[in-house]
Structures are given as structure tokens and as C-alpha cells.
Length: 227
Image 1: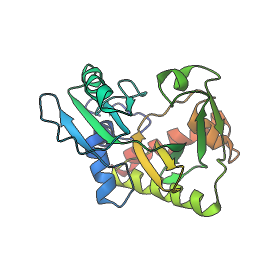
Image 2: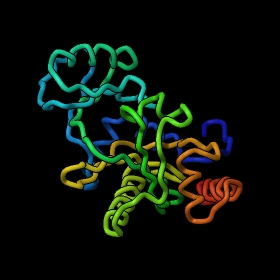
Image 3: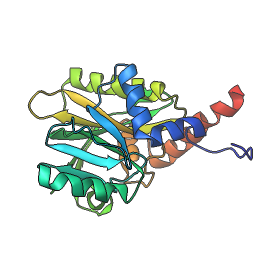
């Protein structure tokens, strides 16, 4: 942006907001988008220990699930914080949602079909994200029409809340007992290999990979035309 170079994707302000999970989650809450309850902790601060077990400890400004730990008991909690602080000076401690995991791509403010991600073992961590065959991906996800519309609406609302442009992807969990859905975070530059989640979602509406790339370029150029 400073050098006047045109690019695909959202601008630097919304990218910075989305990268900071504490800020983006606060925007989710203010705009009525359900997100797991939790706290934001800086290195050296006293921990109020208000989040019950099981819980998740993760970097505030991380990605690809690096520095993310699911903690089920007190004796593992302090070590999880130490390990997460190795990657970032700020961490998020939030309620653990056990259930189904989904991702929703949004292009130019409009949600794509939902994809469900089911890791063969463990949770959707770094290995399961990038090692072929580690997760089963289903698109469109098997959900009721009402659930589909609700999750897509939450994704579109999150896109607007963070002030995004062009395209993004939002991660969701659905509680296995209640069916309640939670938006975990925003991804401002989702993977764009032909087998990545966003291209799979686009393919579900008949958009080929080259067509998706052309479409992203077209919607990304809008921000320059408007200026």
C-alpha cells in the first residue's frame, strides 16, 4: 500500500486486525458474532484463571495452529502457557469447543459453500493442515439448510466487522452437544493451492481454479477503482 503496488486480498488495516485474535474476537462480540469466551494475556501479566477446563491456549498473533494447545487439566496449564509464549508475547486462553470443525470462504462479502474438516486423529493442527491425507474434507458440509444459512451469515458478518475487502476465510466450531456454532478466527490470505479449502468451496459452485483466481483479481481491483 505504501509503495502503491496493487495486490489481491484485503488491505493492511483489516489484515492487522484479523492477525490480532484479541482485537478481532472483540469485534466479533461487538457485532453479535458468536466466538468462544476467553481472556487475552500478555507476558508477565497475572492470570485471573477464569476460563474453566478444558480450554485452549494459543498465540494472539499466530497462524497455522503453531503455539496452540488443548489443555484438559491444571497440571498441563502452566506449561502450555510457557510453550505458547515462546511464539508470541501475547496469548489467548479460551473455552474449548468439542465438536465439528468448518471453514467458510467469503469473496466480495458473499459466503461460499461451507467445508467441513475432520482430522483423522487429534485436532486440526499444523501437521493435519499440511500433511496430505491427514484430514477428511467435505464440501458442501452436511448441515441443515438453517445451519448452513446461519454459519454463512456469521461469516459474512465477520467479514464486514473486520472491514475486509476482496476475500477471506473464517474458521468455525460447532458444539457436539448443543449444535451452537462459534467463529474462531479470520484468515486474510487463505491457502490457494488447487486443493486448498477456498478453491474446494469455489468448485462446489462450479467455479474452476483459474476462474477463481480471475474472480479474486477482479474483486481485488475494486478497492483501487473506488479510490
